[in-house]
Length: 195
Image (cartoon, rainbow, N blue to C red):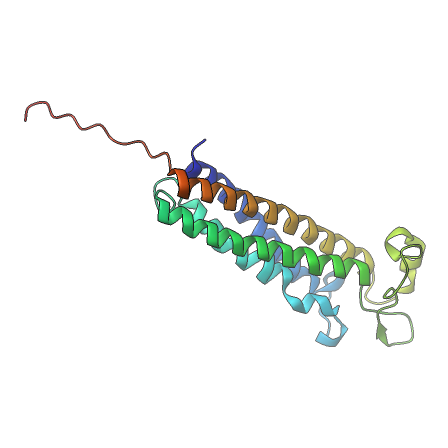
């Protein structure tokens, strides 16, 4: 497979992943579909790891790669530019993985029944972690189902960020190959008959 075609395939895969990451991050602002005050939303959501990290920082290289077959990545300079943008995508994916992991470890911000919003699962040991003990989820009274809401969305963002980082890393390697060896653009044969 040519480096330009490989770039385009990676771009096709990255674009929907970035859109899913943005949507997942936006859903974290509405626990269980409810609109809450900003001080009642889990603090790690405000790091924009799905919107900025796995979203915008990955959409930029994806757009570049989507035009790879005959456009911007069809030459050595374009492939070098795609390497720089793919490095940006790796950083965005890694940022999303880091924040999502922290969100899963810390757990959600919730009301435990006394009207005060706290992080009841923060600083738990691995043995007593809420992720492995579903019976502790009932500690959170409001918003309802906030624990499963956070687990699903942070896990989804963790997976998306991982896949995006790997795909962008593949593009870094592919881009270097395209820059060093050249892209495999077929040269048109010019027929000089009649001249």
